[in-house]
Length: 362
Image 1 (cartoon, rainbow, N blue to C red):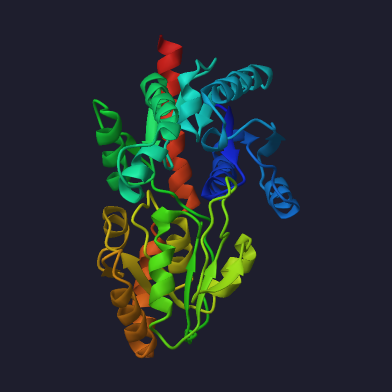
Image 2: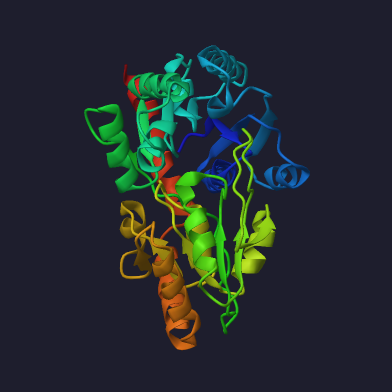
């Protein structure tokens, strides 16, 4: 097995950061070295320490604009050109673009575009009315990037089908499920509270529904994550107990108490927070959406994503029945054990090597 040098893009704003670290760490034993090119806001000190601890990874803070925070198309194209130059300087064999809009600019090496989310599919699920003009140029760039990429990957079958339909692709993207770093199971006796986590400000996460549900139940309902986006979008919580942004270790400490974990997301390409909660053995109450059904059928309680009373009742039923809560949490933990960094890395490495073989034969 020949060694491979990979340039992978990432950002420090959302779940792509942890995805990139988990993937790079699992690729290293397979002989794949990762240069991680960071776009958007800089990482904090804890993130830098975490990146330094990953074998086979070197972090490059580019200072380039992140596509969904960029002011216009020209900024994204300029960032993509800089990434292409970085790939040349670093003498990499492959490029993985976790921001598919960057793939609209030709890369000097074979490029795989991984669609973790996009504004067009997000708007279809969480927006109102026609796609706004401010998203139109981003969608056009993503469409061009998907057309140019040597391979396209999505983290779930449900989301891959949505991407295919949205961008009118000839075939569905390949699917490689995310595999977050495995965390140990939580305490034997679950604590009697509820928790949600993620980008609280993101309307697609349905946090406003959970805030109303929190008003209906007489127990502590915590919310971990930012309430304000980098672009200034904000949510005000009246009933959820905000914990602010928690790093992975701090969130793991809360999940280890095995609260009931809830997500009312209308839009969810995968759901890393749900996966981490399941790893800890938390019972799950989830929005009735295709991605969650794909991953958690037979494990979670499902509720209409707009039904705050339904969420309140489902959460209360689990808290009031510790035996049921423990059993559901164990089902979630066993299901989560299928999704590992090693399985994710093996899936991605297969694409990398197939692309290199195809390039060599051309």
